[in-house]
Length: 102
Image (cartoon, rainbow, N blue to C red; front, top):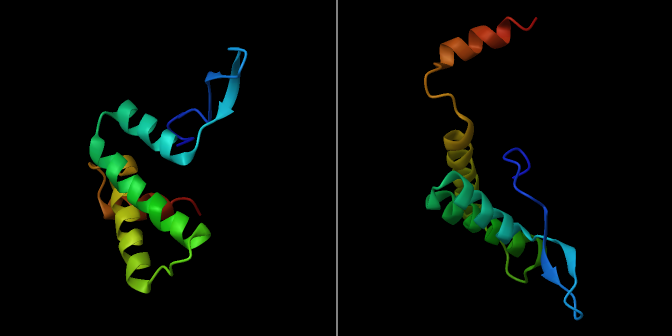
């Protein structure tokens, strides 16, 4: 989310007197803002599914199974590939470029 400059806070929150204040956005809100920014709803669905697995693993009383984790990794890989992959660059070109770093 940070890479795409999705805000971490909002100033639309108001206290009891009506005064605006800065409020931290939760991950679900940031995912929604990201999906709206890139105008592709499938990212919202993918990232919310990953968020659910993370929440269950961190805060839940249900176990995350090995299958759940492998599915989450597949989904994460797919999302990253779509967001960052340079479609015109072949694997061979990437390997040559990385070897050139020596």
